[in-house]
Image 1: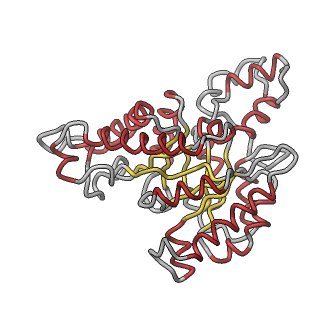
Image 2 (image 1 turned 90 degrees about the vertical axis):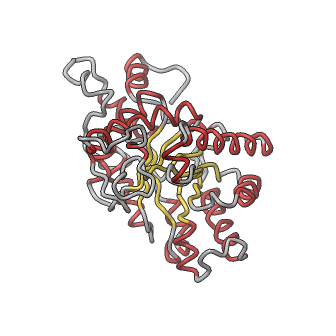
Amino acid sequence: MTAAMSPKMELASTMIHRNKALDEMNANRLAYMLGIQATFNPGKSRVPWPERRYRRPPPLPELICILAATEIAQMAKQAGYPAIYLNCEHSGTGLQRVQDLACACLNVGISLIVVAPDNTQWISRALDCGVQGVIIPRTNDADMARTLVKYSKHRPVGERPLAETPNQRYRMMYNDFPFAEAMEVANERTLAIPMIETVKGLENIEEICAVPGVDAVFVGTWDLMEEMGILGQYDNPLLMEAYDKIAAAAEKASVNGRKVFVGCGGLEPRPDLIKKLTEKHKCIRLFMASRDNTLASPPSFMNEPGALMKGMRAEVAGFQALAEKIGA
């Protein structure tokens, strides 16, 4: 958008929430995400934190799970995370809970980025709920990336249907609603992110990054290592070669004012590799920083007040220290 905006564009800009993760990356800062699993799936997790405040199992576990899950947005904000990462591919989380968390994130000014269960209209439905970024797993080629853009961006970039987000919902009945401008701002602030976690996706990375409307690619490190036959081998040169190839493709696609970023998942145990990659490639700025079910061991999680919050703040402090070292 230009410096001098029209009144309608100004209105649209106030109605579409800023994307905190995108703002951080555009400012050449690190955008680190809190991955949540125990929060939304207490019955399946070894760390059922929503029940930790109760001496007995709650009489309404589903309700308490939802309330606690939305509370995690406030906790992430207080700890200093710009974004939350929710994986809907490998969980039973439905759109209602996605909307609960999305609204909570919007209200505190952080982004919710979700991994979609499939490359379908689920994408636009999640965005209508207030999600600000969608990751599509196992993106193998440019056609899959184009489908992601189709459902995540409004025309003329994609074909996302005209709909309202939580912040727009109660303004659409008025005659002054700036539909065209709102779609333009939404396109700018919505992250469409193919996930690279297959050898085929790695082979086609240049074509994937070149697709108009793709804002970043996200590397699923563990799945990619497994496909490459080097599972768990963080120090295998093939892994760094893969990251170099992905970063080069993103940098090649970053022309004429366009920026394509690279995100990393699965590198949490190796901050040395995170430091190396961020120093080597300025496009690598998005990270899975930690997960709620690994920030505190089960005994302390259940018995020590504030264990999760302490773990979250410690992880954020680590990324902030890294950012200072690399000037990001």
